[in-house]
Image (tube, rainbow, N blue to C red; front, side, top):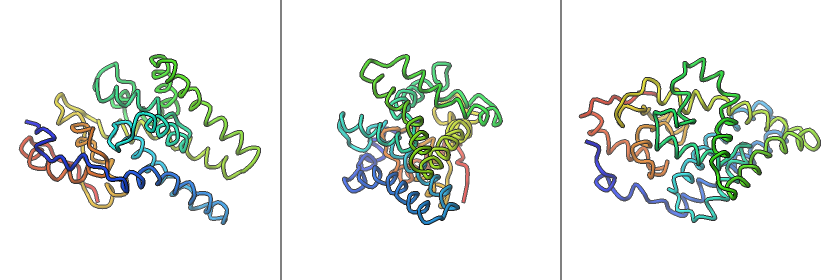
Length: 259
């Protein structure tokens, strides 16, 4: 039996102001590092910096979507826009489709979860159209106010590429890196975590345990824990995982071991 979150500890829901600032500012620290590396001619550093930006943005946006950072309504809307803008993506489309994913996976009504039913090769090939299809799904179901956000976000990659061509080559390279980088979402964030999913909440996704890999991904590898308790912010998922260990062991669920 899956315990209630209150039984595991209300401290798992706490986000301090310092943690909130850190989570929301890390993507922009990454942008600054990218600009410094490019300006210094250290082009070989730009791909790993871009990877770090991806992890920081996905973590922060994830927590904003689930309202686990303590932001108000207006701040949430702006956070979705500004965080998505870092990767030239739509934060509002992500909120619509990700919450639908939590409500309906696995079903035909879950556009985000679709790559879970593809092969690994199929998930890779699906990458270039994944975000566009999520945006279309969200736009068709959005109210007017949300459609304005979605339209503004859809213009971001075109604006960045245009500005990069006219003003700064570094921006053009950054835009290319984040656009192409987003093509791995279906494989890394859907197919692999949900591969060979089962019929129960404990078997519909997996969890990775280790020291290096979970830290490198800012605890996003605790996918099962997140699906069971989506209201827990990312920075508490490792603690949540430790408290769930006896429950998972009793249920016969074996976490994937990584370094």
